[in-house]
Length: 349
Image (cartoon, rainbow, N blue to C red):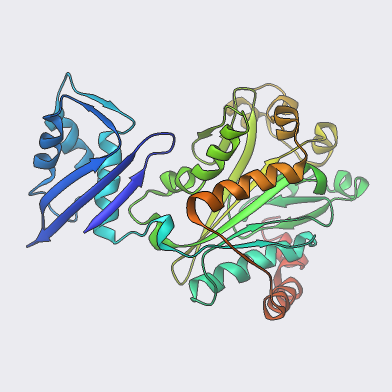
């Protein structure tokens, strides 16, 4: 059995092992990490060998930490990262390069249709009708996208939304509300087999699926980091927020909205950003929570997107693709039956 885990912002940890009579055998940990002293690697292998194959990650990590003791230096990885690599080996996890990735980057679509496409495309990947896909969105109009479980009245000032011609829609994933203006926003989605994140906790899967874009942002000169659970940030403020939905068929929908630019005054007239949320983020002003890409890079929005896509393509490969009529028809039907209805929008009033 073979499993790999690339630590976000760190090094690769590889686990090769066998299982006999329900216990781990012949465990070998390797990777491009740094470890001192050399003999510590043997201690890691020995600590894991003989453990029950169904041991949770916390137990595996504790055993590794206990075996290493004091005086051991681990750079670019941790006992927890070793545990994740082992769990991924046991789960038969796949790696990015095990899949043939397709790219969708279509023309502008209305917000409700975007919500419907998320469900349709994810279901197609889960059913094996579409390969794992990266989709870059283009927005046809202003929008607020609220999370599946958010209260409409608590999150959105509907008078403000009407005044600024903002469409309000609800997505199928959880998380917080996002304010979108077509030229000021970069949005992308990943539709991936669950095997890609097997062995990862829900929290770890966020940073894992967005590591490539953090690399792309750093290549643009931005000091980007991942802030759990689901934010990409810089020293100045938030750059992006992610959300996920696990669907039947073993597929993960992971989508991210990034601020290329922002009209903070307009956003504050449409979104009701609570004091508790601002306090939790360590800021007193909503204007200071967001750190747009335009001011940091000086690049046009299209150029930022091109650099992001190029990073993904160079790491994992990409085949350019397009939406077919069947997919668009299914999405349009979902707008009529679900995403464009008052019942769905107000499911949490």
